[in-house]
Image 1 (cartoon, rainbow, N blue to C red):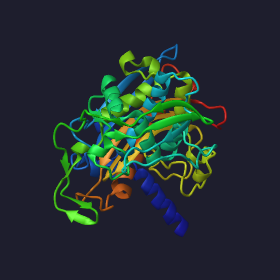
Image 2: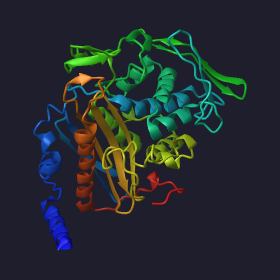
Image 3: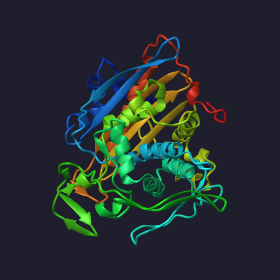
Image 4: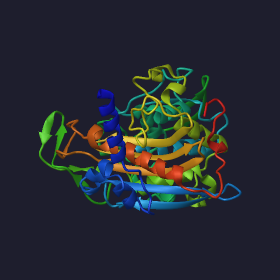
Length: 415
Protein backbone atom coordinates (compact mmCIF):
# COMPACT_ATOMS: atom_id res chain seq x y z
CA UNK A 1 0.00 0.00 0.00
CA UNK A 2 2.79 2.42 1.00
CA UNK A 3 4.65 1.69 -2.26
CA UNK A 4 1.51 2.37 -4.27
CA UNK A 5 1.02 5.74 -2.55
CA UNK A 6 4.64 6.72 -3.17
CA UNK A 7 4.36 5.79 -6.85
CA UNK A 8 1.13 7.81 -7.13
CA UNK A 9 2.73 10.87 -5.50
CA UNK A 10 5.70 10.58 -7.85
CA UNK A 11 3.44 10.36 -10.86
CA UNK A 12 1.45 13.39 -9.69
CA UNK A 13 4.65 15.38 -9.13
CA UNK A 14 5.96 14.46 -12.57
CA UNK A 15 2.66 15.40 -14.18
CA UNK A 16 2.76 18.81 -12.49
CA UNK A 17 6.22 19.60 -13.82
CA UNK A 18 5.93 21.48 -17.08
CA UNK A 19 8.48 21.00 -19.81
CA UNK A 20 10.33 24.16 -20.72
CA UNK A 21 8.93 25.43 -24.02
CA UNK A 22 10.42 27.85 -26.53
CA UNK A 23 8.17 30.10 -28.58
CA UNK A 24 10.81 32.53 -29.74
CA UNK A 25 11.34 34.56 -26.57
CA UNK A 26 12.73 34.33 -23.07
CA UNK A 27 9.41 35.68 -21.80
CA UNK A 28 7.61 32.60 -23.11
CA UNK A 29 10.29 30.28 -21.77
CA UNK A 30 10.09 31.73 -18.26
CA UNK A 31 6.28 31.69 -18.40
CA UNK A 32 6.34 27.98 -19.27
CA UNK A 33 7.84 27.18 -15.85
CA UNK A 34 5.78 29.24 -13.35
CA UNK A 35 6.75 26.97 -10.45
CA UNK A 36 10.39 27.96 -10.97
CA UNK A 37 10.28 31.49 -12.31
CA UNK A 38 6.99 33.20 -11.41
CA UNK A 39 8.26 34.69 -8.13
CA UNK A 40 11.02 36.50 -10.01
CA UNK A 41 9.14 37.39 -13.20
CA UNK A 42 6.23 38.90 -11.25
CA UNK A 43 8.74 41.13 -9.44
CA UNK A 44 11.42 41.53 -12.09
CA UNK A 45 12.19 45.15 -11.18
CA UNK A 46 12.54 44.30 -7.50
CA UNK A 47 14.98 41.52 -8.36
CA UNK A 48 16.64 43.64 -11.08
CA UNK A 49 16.79 40.48 -13.15
CA UNK A 50 18.37 40.53 -16.61
CA UNK A 51 18.91 37.58 -18.97
CA UNK A 52 20.69 37.26 -22.33
CA UNK A 53 20.68 34.05 -24.36
CA UNK A 54 22.53 33.44 -27.63
CA UNK A 55 21.78 30.53 -29.92
CA UNK A 56 24.71 29.39 -32.05
CA UNK A 57 24.43 27.72 -35.43
CA UNK A 58 27.28 26.56 -37.66
CA UNK A 59 27.49 26.44 -41.44
CA UNK A 60 29.07 23.63 -43.46
CA UNK A 61 32.50 25.17 -42.80
CA UNK A 62 31.84 25.31 -39.02
CA UNK A 63 31.57 29.10 -39.06
CA UNK A 64 29.16 30.30 -36.36
CA UNK A 65 26.18 32.60 -36.64
CA UNK A 66 24.44 34.02 -33.59
CA UNK A 67 20.89 34.86 -32.63
CA UNK A 68 20.47 36.66 -29.31
CA UNK A 69 17.40 37.03 -27.09
CA UNK A 70 17.07 39.32 -24.08
CA UNK A 71 14.83 39.60 -21.04
CA UNK A 72 14.50 42.84 -19.07
CA UNK A 73 17.96 43.99 -20.16
CA UNK A 74 18.81 47.63 -19.50
CA UNK A 75 22.44 48.83 -19.28
CA UNK A 76 21.32 51.86 -17.25
CA UNK A 77 19.98 49.65 -14.43
CA UNK A 78 22.95 49.16 -12.14
CA UNK A 79 24.01 45.87 -10.60
CA UNK A 80 27.22 45.23 -8.70
CA UNK A 81 29.34 42.89 -10.85
CA UNK A 82 31.48 41.51 -8.01
CA UNK A 83 33.97 38.91 -9.29
CA UNK A 84 32.80 38.95 -12.91
CA UNK A 85 35.25 41.83 -13.50
CA UNK A 86 38.13 39.41 -12.93
CA UNK A 87 37.83 37.74 -16.34
CA UNK A 88 38.43 40.84 -18.50
CA UNK A 89 41.34 41.90 -16.29
CA UNK A 90 42.86 38.41 -16.60
CA UNK A 91 42.57 38.54 -20.39
CA UNK A 92 43.94 42.08 -20.52
CA UNK A 93 46.94 41.03 -18.41
CA UNK A 94 47.81 38.36 -21.00
CA UNK A 95 47.32 40.94 -23.72
CA UNK A 96 49.67 43.36 -21.94
CA UNK A 97 52.40 40.73 -21.73
CA UNK A 98 52.11 40.28 -25.50
CA UNK A 99 52.22 44.01 -26.10
CA UNK A 100 55.31 44.50 -23.92
CA UNK A 101 57.09 41.87 -26.02
CA UNK A 102 60.06 41.62 -23.68
CA UNK A 103 62.49 38.67 -23.99
CA UNK A 104 61.89 36.25 -21.13
CA UNK A 105 58.57 37.84 -20.16
CA UNK A 106 55.54 35.55 -20.32
CA UNK A 107 52.69 34.40 -18.09
CA UNK A 108 54.98 32.03 -16.15
CA UNK A 109 57.69 34.60 -15.39
CA UNK A 110 58.00 35.31 -11.65
CA UNK A 111 56.06 38.46 -10.76
CA UNK A 112 57.06 40.36 -7.62
CA UNK A 113 54.70 43.06 -6.39
CA UNK A 114 56.19 45.77 -4.21
CA UNK A 115 54.81 48.68 -2.21
CA UNK A 116 55.28 52.43 -2.48
CA UNK A 117 52.70 53.45 0.12
CA UNK A 118 51.50 52.35 3.56
CA UNK A 119 48.15 51.22 2.13
CA UNK A 120 49.79 48.93 -0.44
CA UNK A 121 50.84 45.34 0.24
CA UNK A 122 53.62 43.23 -1.25
CA UNK A 123 53.37 39.79 -2.88
CA UNK A 124 56.56 37.75 -3.15
CA UNK A 125 55.29 34.18 -2.67
CA UNK A 126 52.38 32.01 -3.80
CA UNK A 127 51.84 28.71 -2.04
CA UNK A 128 49.48 27.46 -4.77
CA UNK A 129 52.20 27.78 -7.42
CA UNK A 130 54.44 24.86 -8.38
CA UNK A 131 57.48 27.08 -7.84
CA UNK A 132 56.10 28.79 -4.74
CA UNK A 133 56.43 32.08 -6.61
CA UNK A 134 53.72 34.32 -8.08
CA UNK A 135 53.14 34.83 -11.79
CA UNK A 136 50.47 36.24 -14.08
CA UNK A 137 49.58 32.71 -15.18
CA UNK A 138 49.05 31.38 -11.68
CA UNK A 139 47.06 34.44 -10.67
CA UNK A 140 44.77 33.77 -13.63
CA UNK A 141 44.42 30.10 -12.63
CA UNK A 142 43.35 31.15 -9.12
CA UNK A 143 40.94 33.77 -10.46
CA UNK A 144 39.16 31.36 -12.76
CA UNK A 145 39.25 28.21 -10.62
CA UNK A 146 38.14 29.65 -7.27
CA UNK A 147 37.64 33.39 -7.92
CA UNK A 148 40.58 34.41 -5.71
CA UNK A 149 40.36 38.10 -4.76
CA UNK A 150 44.04 38.71 -4.02
CA UNK A 151 44.99 37.24 -7.40
CA UNK A 152 42.67 39.73 -9.08
CA UNK A 153 44.12 42.60 -7.07
CA UNK A 154 47.64 41.73 -8.24
CA UNK A 155 46.60 41.79 -11.89
CA UNK A 156 44.70 45.05 -11.29
CA UNK A 157 47.98 46.47 -9.97
CA UNK A 158 49.94 45.15 -12.94
CA UNK A 159 47.48 46.64 -15.40
CA UNK A 160 46.77 49.95 -13.67
CA UNK A 161 43.36 51.60 -13.37
CA UNK A 162 43.74 53.91 -16.35
CA UNK A 163 45.00 51.24 -18.72
CA UNK A 164 42.19 48.84 -17.81
CA UNK A 165 39.44 51.36 -18.40
CA UNK A 166 40.87 52.93 -21.52
CA UNK A 167 41.22 49.47 -23.05
CA UNK A 168 37.64 48.54 -22.12
CA UNK A 169 36.23 51.70 -23.67
CA UNK A 170 38.50 51.29 -26.68
CA UNK A 171 36.95 47.87 -27.24
CA UNK A 172 33.48 49.36 -27.06
CA UNK A 173 32.51 48.39 -23.51
CA UNK A 174 31.16 51.82 -22.64
CA UNK A 175 28.85 50.73 -19.80
CA UNK A 176 31.62 49.22 -17.70
CA UNK A 177 34.31 50.45 -15.33
CA UNK A 178 36.83 48.61 -13.15
CA UNK A 179 38.11 51.06 -10.57
CA UNK A 180 38.91 49.19 -7.37
CA UNK A 181 40.46 46.12 -5.85
CA UNK A 182 38.19 43.48 -4.31
CA UNK A 183 37.76 42.56 -0.64
CA UNK A 184 39.70 45.71 0.17
CA UNK A 185 38.98 48.72 2.35
CA UNK A 186 41.01 51.14 0.22
CA UNK A 187 39.47 54.49 -0.68
CA UNK A 188 38.67 55.63 -4.21
CA UNK A 189 41.82 57.76 -4.16
CA UNK A 190 43.99 54.87 -2.94
CA UNK A 191 42.63 52.60 -5.67
CA UNK A 192 43.91 55.10 -8.25
CA UNK A 193 47.43 54.12 -7.16
CA UNK A 194 48.84 50.78 -8.26
CA UNK A 195 51.94 49.06 -6.91
CA UNK A 196 55.40 48.77 -8.45
CA UNK A 197 55.99 45.40 -10.12
CA UNK A 198 59.10 43.45 -11.13
CA UNK A 199 59.36 40.36 -13.32
CA UNK A 200 62.33 38.10 -12.64
CA UNK A 201 63.94 35.11 -14.34
CA UNK A 202 65.94 33.46 -11.56
CA UNK A 203 67.58 36.58 -10.10
CA UNK A 204 67.70 38.53 -13.36
CA UNK A 205 65.36 41.46 -13.87
CA UNK A 206 63.26 40.93 -17.01
CA UNK A 207 60.86 43.87 -16.75
CA UNK A 208 60.13 46.57 -14.20
CA UNK A 209 57.09 48.79 -13.80
CA UNK A 210 57.00 51.71 -11.38
CA UNK A 211 54.04 52.59 -9.17
CA UNK A 212 51.38 54.33 -11.25
CA UNK A 213 48.79 56.96 -10.37
CA UNK A 214 45.71 57.41 -12.53
CA UNK A 215 44.88 61.10 -12.90
CA UNK A 216 41.63 60.45 -14.81
CA UNK A 217 38.47 59.66 -12.89
CA UNK A 218 36.36 56.74 -14.12
CA UNK A 219 33.81 57.13 -11.35
CA UNK A 220 30.17 56.78 -12.35
CA UNK A 221 28.83 59.97 -13.90
CA UNK A 222 25.74 59.99 -11.67
CA UNK A 223 24.77 58.58 -8.26
CA UNK A 224 23.85 54.87 -8.18
CA UNK A 225 21.95 54.74 -4.88
CA UNK A 226 20.42 51.46 -3.78
CA UNK A 227 18.89 50.13 -0.58
CA UNK A 228 17.96 51.89 2.64
CA UNK A 229 20.86 51.09 4.96
CA UNK A 230 24.42 49.78 5.15
CA UNK A 231 26.54 48.23 7.88
CA UNK A 232 29.92 50.00 8.08
CA UNK A 233 32.47 49.05 10.76
CA UNK A 234 29.73 47.32 12.72
CA UNK A 235 27.41 50.32 12.70
CA UNK A 236 24.13 50.59 10.80
CA UNK A 237 23.91 53.71 8.67
CA UNK A 238 20.36 54.64 7.68
CA UNK A 239 20.99 55.80 4.13
CA UNK A 240 21.19 54.29 0.65
CA UNK A 241 24.53 52.97 -0.59
CA UNK A 242 25.97 54.87 -3.56
CA UNK A 243 27.60 52.49 -6.06
CA UNK A 244 28.93 55.28 -8.31
CA UNK A 245 32.39 54.67 -6.83
CA UNK A 246 32.13 50.92 -7.36
CA UNK A 247 32.92 48.70 -10.34
CA UNK A 248 30.34 48.35 -13.09
CA UNK A 249 30.19 45.67 -15.79
CA UNK A 250 26.95 45.74 -17.76
CA UNK A 251 25.44 42.37 -18.62
CA UNK A 252 25.50 43.15 -22.33
CA UNK A 253 29.22 43.88 -22.03
CA UNK A 254 29.81 40.65 -20.09
CA UNK A 255 27.89 38.64 -22.66
CA UNK A 256 29.74 40.27 -25.56
CA UNK A 257 33.11 39.78 -23.86
CA UNK A 258 32.56 36.02 -23.42
CA UNK A 259 31.29 35.74 -26.98
CA UNK A 260 34.32 37.58 -28.33
CA UNK A 261 36.68 35.53 -26.18
CA UNK A 262 35.21 32.24 -27.38
CA UNK A 263 34.77 33.27 -31.03
CA UNK A 264 37.62 35.70 -31.79
CA UNK A 265 37.47 35.10 -35.54
CA UNK A 266 33.84 36.22 -35.55
CA UNK A 267 34.69 39.38 -33.63
CA UNK A 268 35.13 42.85 -35.09
CA UNK A 269 38.81 43.88 -35.01
CA UNK A 270 38.07 46.69 -32.55
CA UNK A 271 36.74 44.23 -29.96
CA UNK A 272 39.23 41.44 -30.58
CA UNK A 273 41.77 40.75 -27.86
CA UNK A 274 45.44 40.72 -28.83
CA UNK A 275 45.99 37.15 -27.69
CA UNK A 276 47.85 34.19 -29.17
CA UNK A 277 46.14 30.86 -29.79
CA UNK A 278 48.09 29.54 -26.82
CA UNK A 279 46.61 32.33 -24.67
CA UNK A 280 43.10 31.42 -25.76
CA UNK A 281 43.67 27.74 -25.03
CA UNK A 282 45.08 28.63 -21.61
CA UNK A 283 41.95 30.62 -20.74
CA UNK A 284 39.59 27.96 -22.12
CA UNK A 285 41.39 25.24 -20.15
CA UNK A 286 40.93 26.91 -16.80
CA UNK A 287 37.52 28.43 -17.47
CA UNK A 288 36.20 24.90 -18.05
CA UNK A 289 38.29 23.18 -15.35
CA UNK A 290 37.08 22.19 -11.90
CA UNK A 291 39.21 23.10 -8.87
CA UNK A 292 39.87 19.43 -8.11
CA UNK A 293 41.29 18.88 -11.61
CA UNK A 294 43.90 21.61 -11.23
CA UNK A 295 46.51 19.67 -9.30
CA UNK A 296 46.60 22.51 -6.75
CA UNK A 297 46.52 20.85 -3.34
CA UNK A 298 44.67 23.74 -1.70
CA UNK A 299 41.72 23.13 -4.06
CA UNK A 300 41.64 19.33 -3.82
CA UNK A 301 38.98 19.06 -1.08
CA UNK A 302 35.75 18.31 -2.94
CA UNK A 303 33.66 19.40 0.05
CA UNK A 304 35.13 22.91 -0.13
CA UNK A 305 35.40 22.99 -3.91
CA UNK A 306 32.79 20.76 -5.61
CA UNK A 307 32.69 20.64 -9.39
CA UNK A 308 29.88 23.19 -9.45
CA UNK A 309 31.67 25.59 -7.10
CA UNK A 310 31.71 28.57 -9.48
CA UNK A 311 29.02 27.31 -11.87
CA UNK A 312 25.78 29.13 -10.99
CA UNK A 313 23.91 28.53 -14.26
CA UNK A 314 22.63 24.93 -14.46
CA UNK A 315 24.33 23.83 -11.22
CA UNK A 316 23.61 26.45 -8.55
CA UNK A 317 27.19 26.78 -7.36
CA UNK A 318 27.28 23.60 -5.28
CA UNK A 319 26.80 20.51 -7.49
CA UNK A 320 29.19 17.79 -6.33
CA UNK A 321 29.36 16.21 -9.80
CA UNK A 322 28.66 17.58 -13.28
CA UNK A 323 28.17 15.14 -16.19
CA UNK A 324 31.53 14.72 -17.99
CA UNK A 325 30.09 15.62 -21.39
CA UNK A 326 29.14 19.12 -20.18
CA UNK A 327 31.72 21.87 -19.74
CA UNK A 328 30.99 25.45 -18.70
CA UNK A 329 33.35 28.28 -19.69
CA UNK A 330 32.26 31.07 -17.39
CA UNK A 331 32.85 33.65 -14.68
CA UNK A 332 30.51 34.28 -11.75
CA UNK A 333 30.15 37.06 -9.22
CA UNK A 334 28.29 37.39 -5.92
CA UNK A 335 28.23 40.29 -3.45
CA UNK A 336 25.78 42.76 -1.84
CA UNK A 337 22.88 40.48 -2.79
CA UNK A 338 23.77 40.42 -6.49
CA UNK A 339 24.41 37.11 -8.28
CA UNK A 340 25.72 37.06 -11.86
CA UNK A 341 26.99 34.41 -14.24
CA UNK A 342 28.01 34.61 -17.89
CA UNK A 343 28.79 31.30 -19.56
CA UNK A 344 29.53 29.54 -22.82
CA UNK A 345 28.05 26.07 -22.23
CA UNK A 346 29.02 23.01 -24.26
CA UNK A 347 27.68 19.45 -24.34
CA UNK A 348 30.20 17.37 -26.28
CA UNK A 349 27.99 14.27 -26.34
CA UNK A 350 24.92 15.99 -27.81
CA UNK A 351 26.86 18.61 -29.82
CA UNK A 352 25.23 21.55 -28.08
CA UNK A 353 26.66 25.03 -27.52
CA UNK A 354 25.07 28.26 -26.33
CA UNK A 355 25.89 31.44 -24.42
CA UNK A 356 23.83 32.48 -21.42
CA UNK A 357 24.16 35.46 -19.08
CA UNK A 358 21.99 36.41 -16.14
CA UNK A 359 22.01 38.63 -13.07
CA UNK A 360 19.60 38.81 -10.14
CA UNK A 361 19.43 40.90 -6.96
CA UNK A 362 18.24 39.32 -3.70
CA UNK A 363 18.25 41.73 -0.76
CA UNK A 364 14.79 41.72 0.80
CA UNK A 365 15.62 44.03 3.70
CA UNK A 366 17.54 46.42 1.40
CA UNK A 367 20.47 46.49 3.82
CA UNK A 368 24.03 46.02 2.62
CA UNK A 369 26.82 44.18 4.46
CA UNK A 370 24.51 42.45 6.94
CA UNK A 371 25.07 39.04 5.24
CA UNK A 372 21.31 38.63 4.98
CA UNK A 373 20.70 37.92 1.30
CA UNK A 374 18.34 35.43 -0.36
CA UNK A 375 21.05 33.71 -2.40
CA UNK A 376 20.00 30.16 -1.51
CA UNK A 377 16.23 30.76 -1.50
CA UNK A 378 15.82 32.90 -4.63
CA UNK A 379 19.01 33.75 -6.52
CA UNK A 380 20.90 30.50 -7.01
CA UNK A 381 17.75 28.40 -7.69
CA UNK A 382 16.74 30.93 -10.34
CA UNK A 383 20.12 30.73 -12.10
CA UNK A 384 20.26 26.95 -11.81
CA UNK A 385 16.74 26.47 -13.19
CA UNK A 386 17.29 29.04 -15.94
CA UNK A 387 20.40 27.25 -17.18
CA UNK A 388 18.67 23.89 -17.12
CA UNK A 389 15.61 25.24 -18.94
CA UNK A 390 17.75 26.71 -21.72
CA UNK A 391 19.70 23.45 -21.91
CA UNK A 392 16.42 21.54 -22.37
CA UNK A 393 15.52 23.86 -25.24
CA UNK A 394 18.93 23.35 -26.81
CA UNK A 395 18.56 19.57 -26.60
CA UNK A 396 15.41 19.81 -28.73
CA UNK A 397 16.57 22.56 -31.08
CA UNK A 398 17.24 21.40 -34.64
CA UNK A 399 20.57 22.27 -36.26
CA UNK A 400 21.36 21.95 -39.93
CA UNK A 401 25.02 21.30 -39.25
CA UNK A 402 26.67 19.52 -36.33
CA UNK A 403 29.23 21.82 -34.71
CA UNK A 404 32.87 20.84 -34.52
CA UNK A 405 33.72 21.63 -30.90
CA UNK A 406 37.27 20.26 -30.91
CA UNK A 407 38.69 23.73 -30.18
CA UNK A 408 37.26 23.46 -26.68
CA UNK A 409 38.35 19.90 -25.89
CA UNK A 410 41.44 18.98 -23.92
CA UNK A 411 43.06 15.55 -24.40
CA UNK A 412 43.59 14.94 -20.68
CA UNK A 413 39.86 15.00 -19.94
CA UNK A 414 37.19 12.35 -20.17
CA UNK A 415 34.17 13.63 -22.12
